[in-house]
Image 1 (tube, helix red, strand yellow):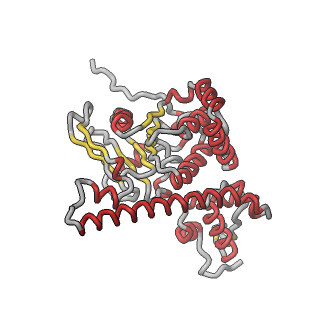
Image 2: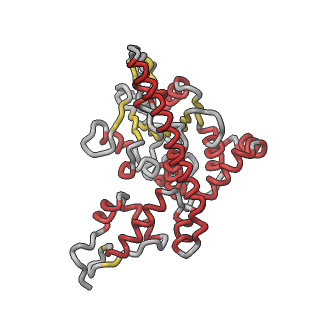
Image 3: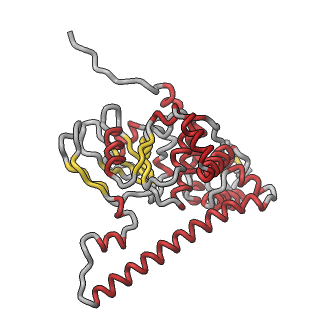
Length: 344
């Protein structure tokens, strides 16, 4: 069978749709998109396949799980209602932010007409919604007192580094320095009883955790104590910032892949930034990173932590790549500690 040259292959189709090739393959595995094949067996995406894939991408942006999208394609319009409600809430949140910003700008203009200049940091707080989370401090051991500044904190922030780089120490310092921050350590999976108590006494948190679990399971996640404990921490009321130690702990690959999609959706309507320590390529998929995500690398040589842009050639990019491993490898090497043998 011959295909017109205009029919893109997988990489070109993914580029046009703004998704990764891995995402396209997942849509195919779930039966949502069916590409054609060339005589040599390569996937090509004709107009129908591209249109269907574009619908999947749009529904994903609304927050639908792949299972919900399948239901919608099968003729169940009710499956769209929760996602549209979430999108409406997100738009209303953006409107409130814009109205608030407009009010602050008008106040600044009125002050200028009276000859009053903006106070220190006031203009930045108006123009930069993340300025309130700026942080700076001296870095202790193993960095030796160097100055560290973290500004323009985004909704999703990944902290990464090799063993012994100080990334956990940095995460603890962030949790201590950022206003109303909470550190979710590795012991969260061992506190099932405490989490169960929280879910039994706080109906709102319980409802959010159950809703998140249902969405994640629809997405292919495996329900577990580790996942429930993580969600119980993240869905709690109050904290302005969450810092999560090794977010992939106790989660298999499909659960990790579903989780990061969920956290991206959550970031659209929840202003509380997340800092995720990770070494999993399923959690930190460099090809899928958006504009509101940041990588913070703790170098092996104990240079100060640095931001890294998610593209080849950027400073620190190769170092980030060497720190990442697939969930299968991460599970196989969990708990391993690098040691230097003593010389005779």
